[in-house]
Structure formats: C-alpha cells, structure tokens
Image 1 (spheres, rainbow, N blue to C red):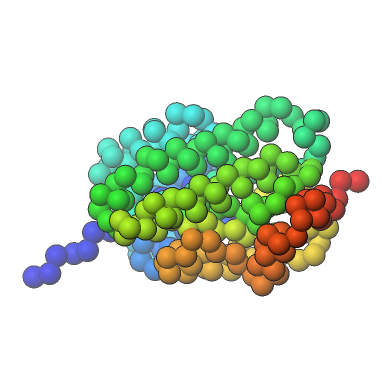
Image 2 (tube, rainbow, N blue to C red):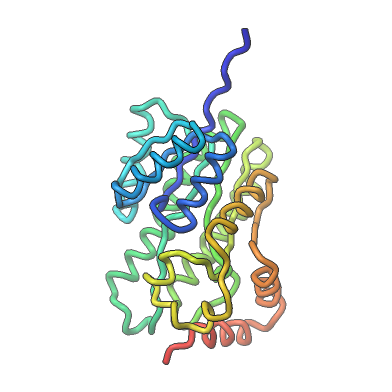
Length: 263
C-alpha cells in the first residue's frame, strides 16, 4: 500500500484580503494545505471556510500582528506545536504610505519597515533551514515593481521593496542547490486594499490601469512553481521594470515621483 504524500503546507501572511487571499485560493486549487495569518481573525476564518468547501484541503488560521517583533517566532512556535512543517512560505503582508517623508508620521514609517522588512526577513530565516534540510519547497516573497527604482513621495515603501527583491534574489541562488526555490513576485498597480491604505487611488499610477489580484496571484504561483527568481506580472509592468534598469537613475526616480503625483 502506497504511503500518503506529506501535505505541502503553505504559510501565507497578509492572507485576509487582496493578493494574499487570492494566493491562498490559487495554492489551494493546486492541492496545497494552508496556514493563513493576518490580524483580522474573522476574515481569515471566512476565507478558510470558503477554501475548505471549494478545494477540500486542510486550512489552519493563526491570527496575529506580524508588525510585532516577537510575532514571527510566536508563529513558528504555534506551527511546531501543531506538528506543521512549512513547505512554502508566502511573505505577502505589507503596506505603503504616500506623502512626504519629512511629514508622514514617524511611527507609521517605522511600522512599515518592521512589517515589510523585519518580519519578512525573520520568517525567511526561521523557515528556510527546514526547507533546505528536507530539500523541498521554497519561499514566495511579494515585492513590487517599486523595487526597481527610488520612489519620491513613497520613499520608505520603495526602499522596503528594494530590500525584499535584493534579499529574494540572493536567497534564490543560496537555496537553489538544495532543491529549494525563492521567488520575488513584483506586481505593479493591483486592485486591493493596498491602494486605499497607501492613499494612491487618485494617483496617476493607479489611474493608468491596474491588474486584478487574482491574475497577479496566478502568475506569481506559476512563476514560483517554475523556479523563477523574479516574476513581474503584466507586459506593462515588465516594460517599466526594464526601463528602470536601463534609464539613468535620475530619470527613473523622477518618473516614479511624477506618477505618485502629490498635489
């Protein structure tokens, strides 16, 4: 009698809405078991119920605030208590703020760094050794096309996503010889709560057109499963990333500042 395959547990942060919720649906449709985490417990439970009914995969909910420095370790402890070994880590939790660096709230900018950078790096460090030991699985970090240039009026957000991209690329090369994939997903403007939180709805960036969270998630998971280091959904976004690479930096940052469009 053949032994049942070990569940491919996928931990998704920021799973309560937007790209995170759609990533959960895509992974579930491919047969992955899920651990969903975010601050909003009721939303997570509703998504978990939907996914269990639609795909019949195990779904666990662990609500916490990853902006807390102790949260990644607490999350790992909770997983160990339940005997869950993570196959795929999806670092999706994050937020942005639009405005002048010198006038945006100090504490909110530090909180952005704690969530977008510190929590992400901590979870990578906590989960990657087990993946390497088991020689399977990987990490999907949600970066942004913001990672490819500096961003006036969203200075800290752009800088955090540059960190995510750089870290992901480096880990991709470190982990690949061990059978582990690390992928940076770099979406452009996307339909989600992010734009409301960041105050971007009236910017030129979002008025120029957005992709759906579902499409971004599908392309991201396909790229991760194909072992790609960087995935940029959408032809327009790929062209923008290439342009940022080859244009002089003063040009790319002025373009970024223009499309953010502070009035």
